Amino acid sequence: QVQLVESGGGLVQPGGSLRLSCAASGSIFSINVAGWYRQGPGKQRELVAAITRGGITNYGDSVKGRFTISRDNARSMVYLEMNSLKPEDTAVYYCTLRDPGVSWGQGTQVTVSS
Image (cartoon, rainbow, N blue to C red; front, side, top):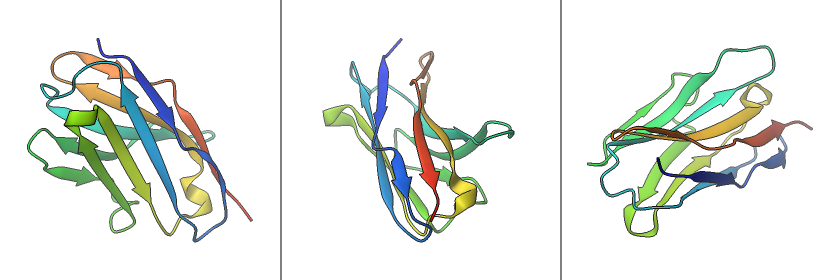
């Protein structure tokens, strides 16, 4: 399994932007799907965004038009650009890779508050 480390979380004001990064310990060229999930206080873990090896993306309804996922296979990185942040976006964000296998990062806290 590929080891993942998220970074870039922190405190941001509503309407602000933040970019999360996910660094993989090994090559992600063969990884079919890279994605981001999040889990807010008292909430279920939900899909935020996903991107296939071919660049096809999928977003959760609550973040469509605001978040953008990307991957840089050559640098073994996955990114999540978050714009127009809302308090409801407050959560721990987890990076994940699947196929082959499934890998999860440790999570990074994003807090949207004034």
